[in-house]
Length: 101
Image 1 (cartoon, helix red, strand yellow):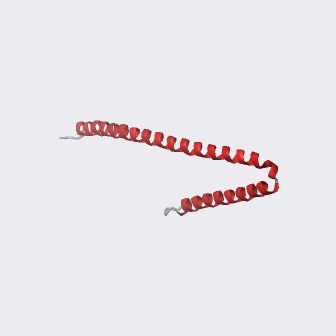
Image 2: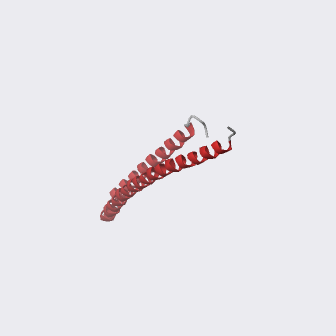
Image 3: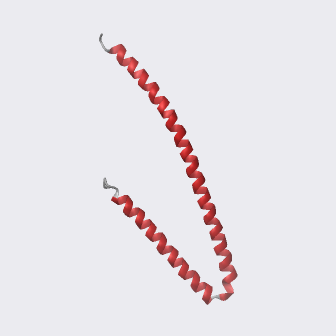
């Protein structure tokens, strides 16, 4: 991995590109089914509605999980700072005991 982060940028851009291509292909396939097989329009409409609801629910879950993880990270960071101060005080005290006066 390069230091300037170009690998990350490339992978992120590739993921975005592939998502766009997949959405375009799904749109074209959906339009073909919608126009060619008119008998399946209610089924296609139901599937699209269910897919949209699932997509919205997944976004809600993702945001909630990120918020919970962020809160836990803040709590862990504060605990780590307290632990760091305690360890530093213990090490400083031990160093002062061992150092000749």
